[in-house]
Amino acid sequence: MAREKNKIESIQITLSVTEPIREMLESLSLSGFYGKNAADTAGLLLREKLRELNTLAGMPGIAPVAGGGR
Image 1 (spheres, rainbow, N blue to C red):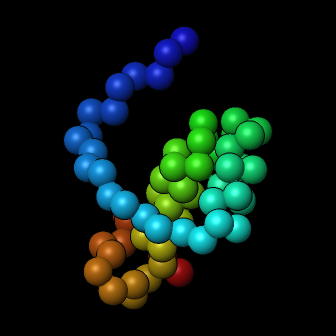
Image 2 (cartoon, helix red, strand yellow; image 1 turned 90 degrees about the vertical axis):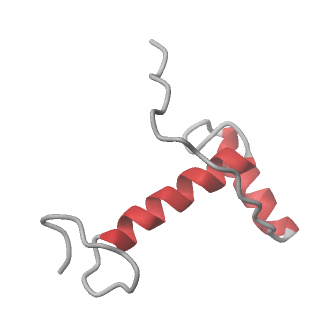
Image 3 (cartoon, rainbow, N blue to C red; image 1 turned 180 degrees about the vertical axis):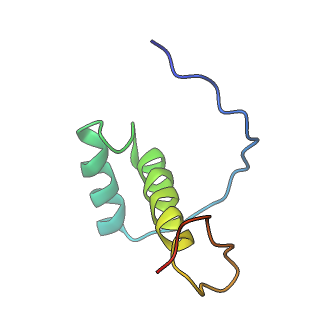
């Protein structure tokens, strides 16, 4: 079953990384678990980290999630 299209508009940003980081992202994407390619994997990992930060109380610039925090 195909995934439903994301209803939230996205924008493109450019992220420069070193060759070892690109290789790690490519390696993670080979399993298909993290993404289809290095860029897809980087986006997924960034979203995961932002969700994690969003649960921390007192993080500047990030509104806490209901029930989140410590």
